[in-house]
Length: 130
Image (cartoon, rainbow, N blue to C red; front, side, top):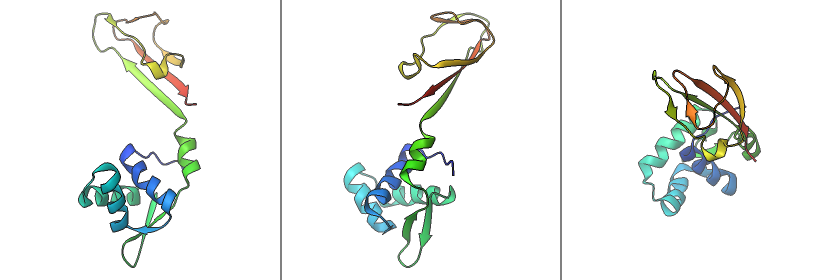
């Protein structure tokens, strides 16, 4: 299952992966201590994880159960794409962000030029995280 989880959702999942099944209230208590979140924030993020199929809600006591394993999420997080576009009619200075400094150029409408994006240039960069 390839599910894209955002940082906030990963915080909730980390609690479940470390502690196992637990009520939403207990997850909220842990995250209040570690991140400062209030109960409403935690419950909102848990509901997003449920909607994505990452968590299953069980009764009684709004018991949360992780439906996807940490290694599945980590595998999905090992690749990234970056699309960079210049929507102007002029060249603009551009330096690749550090994580993409050595990324593979998958697609471009120009031959690459260091330090600049030409008018209406678009690039798609790919990298595998290590």
